[in-house]
Image (cartoon, rainbow, N blue to C red; front, side):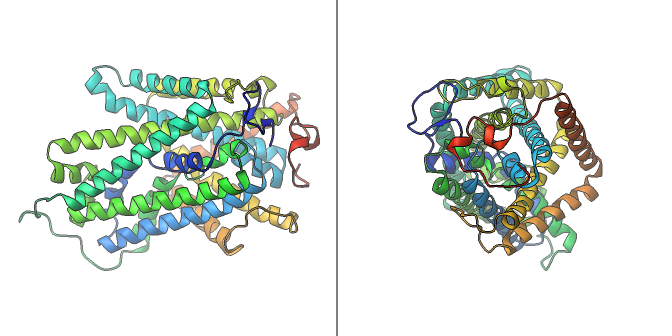
Length: 463
């Protein structure tokens, strides 16, 4: 593995091979489940006529994520390097595309991190009696301190928070199914009409569901820090999606057990409405606790993952060398500081509506790059041994790619302004990347990189 210590010793300047399957599953769950699941079921129900359609759409979104995880598992097990999507873009398409993908990936992480921190700040501002930016920044700095301590501390906190949020959601599910709740009152609005919805409502509902599943790729950013990446990474990606899918289906089943479809569709925060029905005044406290755990786990994941992108880019020569500095605990400290500092700037800047629209476009665009890279690498290296092979190739990546293209097309039509801003951001990032190349910040050839002797790189023309 690149610049890692296979014995797990605390050697300065090296990532540590100390993560296992438990962390990988926690990273997938923690990177996926946020506060969105508390709200999205209402948005989905507003588009669909019955509970069976609602469950089917959530199942379909989970299958999409599961197939995407299988595609990524092949790439991650074959190229277990820190950095995420840019690693596969470099192998398939060369250095210019790699730099562009890596920078866009890091920006998308920072946008998401700033929004999640701001959302958590909004939850804490009223009870603390302060401006929302204060707790938001405080939480960012707290998790930066945890990560600075080392990868073991970051991994342990991820496992603890992911377990806590899953348990909190299961408590809510159990309360909905097991505790008595009032039967719908006579004046409850009639249920939505049964039957089949049109194509547009299905697409809109599926977009919301896919966005809520986003984050399943989180384990790949730690690929070279796993003890056994060829086995642990595929199991983490696929097992994590299965766990999230099961939890999402349970949550929706619980909400439908308590709320009529029409009420579910009208609720701005369906989970809060369900908790109020079954728990009374204590319901709001439970939902607040669930939301806090979900947001804290997500912040920990992103604060831990995003610096690995900058670390990999720096180590491979795409960014100045000082960015790849790693402390004895295995944390890329300079990259961590840059990530947290930029996210704090976004928190202080305020409004996130446009940034989220831009980020949503990038969140789906990046996996699409991975799917295309998988096809190209299969064509370029048909006989290359792979520790893990994607299910049902080539049909699986074709299906994932088609859905991703459809999602991006739908975003262009339904949110044209933000989609164009996202494309503009990608173009600007590409120009900056090209400028840095002209200013002699040249990527290192694969054979001369510091870690080249300790890992097998595919013999790709793009490299």
